Figure 1 (tube, rainbow, N blue to C red):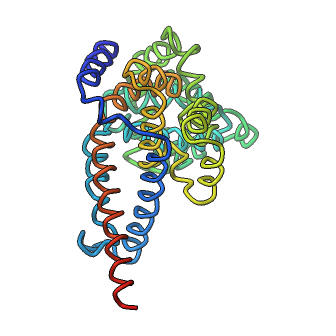
Figure 2: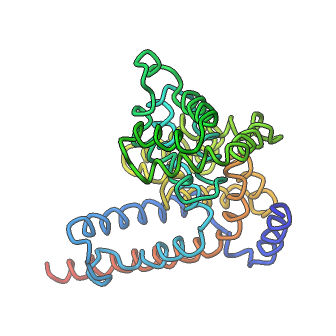
Length: 331
């Protein structure tokens, strides 16, 4: 299905006017630096007044770029949210003496594959809020992997009858009804819980693709391949521009920001006139299992972003010329 969508977007890109993609590195640099400056000025005003009207922004001409991104870059925004969630999951793993691999297994099994609402929120309360401490009575075990300890705790509960089980869990959770019910629901469905864990672990892509992607997303600043990304930008815009942007326009260098994504698209457009080549470049930068949807989206959205960026830059230059003309008359 993903390959079909990529081919569909490729066909659309092939039929777009060539003039739309006739872009030099110098033109792209000028547009991107202007957009970065304008976006920064707009955000500065928003920080002062969160309810600021569009017309009161320093550069309202940036709005079509922002709205287009919000509307059309859904998979990119999903990737941003996923990265944030995985970073939180990594922190949870560390706090519970485990790896992100183990945290991922238990979060998936409890939060996404469980039946009841109580079970689906259990991971959050037990491990993100560290409530699991209350279930571990032996202090020497507090330094062990708490996901494994919780798993052992659940299986020990299966040995008790329903009445004794509820009584023990109520005491262990200090009579927290919500968490108690989540634990009891999980114990009642322990076979399904164990199966969910095993299904995750035994998935053919788990060890070879999912685990490497988990580690990559939480140990790197962005989810883009850093070497491929940097090489692309330097090839398209030159080392001088890249170095300047590191201090003056850092948002152009990260795929965690709107303008960073658009910068990537412009770099690809500058270097590769053919859509097949551009798609391949995107695939080299976003190659792991979590970001494999992005290349097709970036190819699909190139035209609208370039069109809006050009319109903004035209207005930006016109405003500068108008201001200079006005200043000259005042002398």
